[in-house]
Length: 328
Image 1 (cartoon, rainbow, N blue to C red):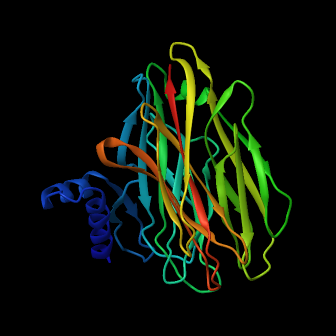
Image 2 (spheres, one colour):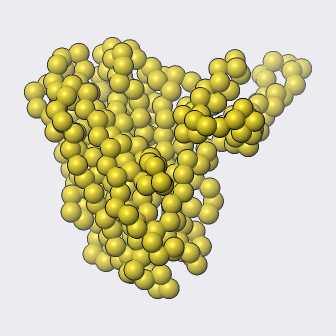
Image 3 (cartoon, one colour):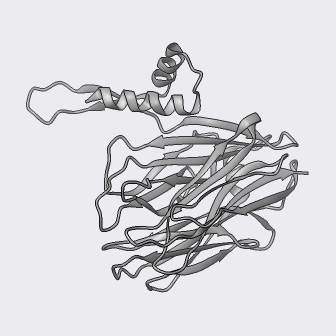
């Protein structure tokens, strides 16, 4: 049973490091492993020492033009496949505060779509939920968390400069709600949590809207009303010893397609703090399965997003957003 997990870990590392040698792959797997003692319930059986990938597999790191704001993106992949993944946690190391993140299910053969991508209460982890719909399509969910550090500040001090505002929609087939960042803060990012059950109410938007965060979701072919909660993550617009904090929100839109996808780069000089997406759907609907922070050539940060129709043809476009911070 260990072999497919190790093979999967090697494949994930090679996807981000295609020129790595076998020795480098081995070192990465061992270096990111954490020991977990698992007790066998059978009488007289010894405890087993198992190794699993840790939560803090760093994908890339980036610093703003001032050198004061640093972010790092961490990835975690579920060890098993499931039709429904609920609040899969991607933790950040103890010297970081979660400021953003994303996750992905899958697009084929039927799809496993996003139902949540949002921060936990103490900003130590990003939580991702996905589910398939009427056709079974289990997935190993993949999540990414964006951790924030600010030069000269402790984790607790950084946490004190970050706020999370929430707003929850009414119970409806197509929830739509916006959370607003309070005065004195600038938008750093945001997230969504769909509070549903049954066949499912699936994400169609989690995106910036001025100094606020708007989210939308919908049921699909089968009545399944839900509420949705929007999370707007803000940071103080001025921090003593650091300076004025400004944000950049870059966006673009894909062509119309059954399975649209788009990658939006972040403006130079900013450190990536959040990713957003908005599916421009009509008809039966087109559903989101990916919001993901990535690193491009020459260390350029970006966000890649994707959605899909399901069973019934319903092409759409998708808008992608990258949000960044810098100190002046």
